[in-house]
Length: 233
Image 1 (cartoon, rainbow, N blue to C red):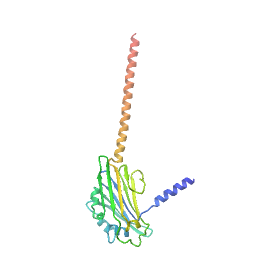
Image 2 (cartoon, helix red, strand yellow; image 1 turned 30 degrees about the horizontal axis):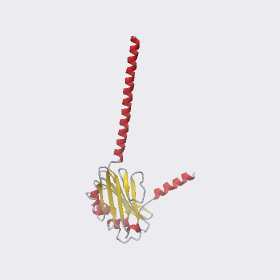
Image 3 (cartoon, one colour; image 1 turned 120 degrees about the horizontal axis):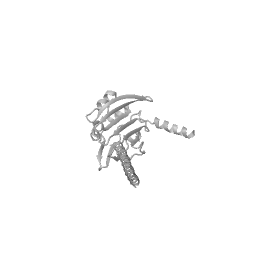
Image 4 (cartoon, rainbow, N blue to C red; image 1 turned 90 degrees about the vertical axis):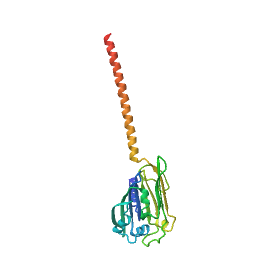
């Protein structure tokens, strides 16, 4: 019972983990994907240079040929208002040139026939930290990679096989050293790898069954031929 209680507490704490600002990217091997941006009004204003964040102003700020906005909504937590923007992009490198991310340096590159590399440099925030933002407020960047991750520079372990998060406190990003995100991952997606493994396994099963059937048929013919010889004698 004690172990069950401790596990329940651990899951509860994980579920309660929250960020004052978060970018979550669901990336595909062809460079397309989805992005979710969530944050308090104060952090959205200083990070993306939006003078008065609102549902309409945030949609107008992020809508671009490189990013199709699917939804913009607002929530509140502990008396603070948050805006959540969700959109779809067809090219991560084009997204890097989006005006809303112009202060950053980022890209997706093909290293060889087997690997892709992603980098994202988030500069330190030079604006003064807004008074509602506490020094220990957490800002997070989370990537859902489409395949096995070969290497990364995050302080945190890989979650559920292919999810990595990079996070900093407000104190670290405001006037600090910024944040550098680096990761290398396989070009072949998890789905493609699974299909290949299943196809190979199925091929082995079919081949084994065919060999067994051939051997049994040949053995049966020999036995039948022996029986006929015995009858003729």
